[in-house]
Length: 398
Image (cartoon, rainbow, N blue to C red; front, side):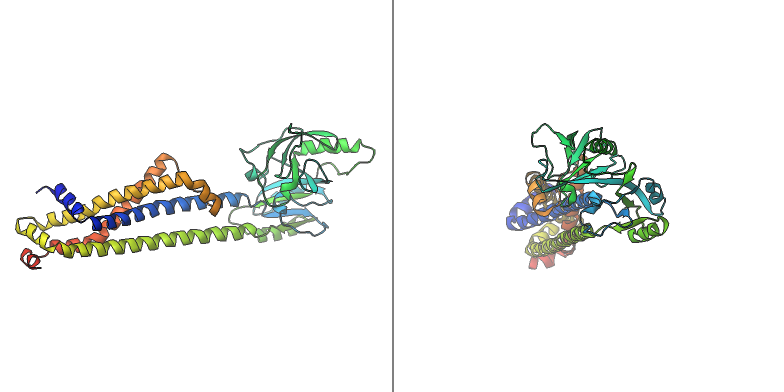
């Protein structure tokens, strides 16, 4: 008895049943791969957002006037009070601090042709230690800014198109633009401390200097807390150990965003699990109905000499064949949809859906196919096992 022909005849002989199992297999395989891609995309997006959280703590000079701190986690504080840059070492020595990066607010330039907004902030920062602006760069990290180079917020641009601009008479070249942050960084022009010193020297040569700042001063220190440490506890220690400064904890905007992404992930996984359960249950019902329909046929096969093992293998192989065919179709469909509509999905949901490297994708596809086969075998095992053990005479009387 040719087992392959028997399986093929049974699949084609009950086309509606086979199509129902194929559809369930497509759902199981497609959902397993799509859920994995969604989880990976959400995790990548969450990691990217976490890197964009900016400073956990902003350290400012004692006596700075209170203001709205939203957006200060990236562009520091627009304050005209300064503290010695030497404070950086004291702040870094506080337990729980991982990175400290200085910023220096120089001035607010009003009605600048460089900015689409009424005000533009001129800020010095250190690209080497920076961790707050770098994740917002459109391309690769800068590493270091040369003298006269600048990074602009999304609202800052060169009206002449040559990227060469004048700030208080000092030539500046705009080399990069940050992505939109939604905060003060959007209307800020960032330069290195060396360029800031050159600008300050140029300002002092003017009859009426626009501002005057002592050398080696900073207006804020951006602090990243070491993993596993509580930002509030680190801020309290900083207040106790570093006199003359005020540590400000950043707002919880990104924490709320993280909670939203985690909630979406849970929903996706719950829906995928529910769909798998319902599909497996449905396939079990289909196989049970098929078993009842084929009792006489199986009884005749047993009477002609087919063993229980052969009958069981033929029934399970029928399910595995449908599972592999439907699973492969479901995986191919999800890969096609992800390639065609990944960008639109990312734009609508803020979750980046992208296909991983070919080797990783092959592993995910194999895992999805294995889950589909296991689901079909699970659904088919009980009715197939029961039918294969039934006595031929009893089955043929039905």
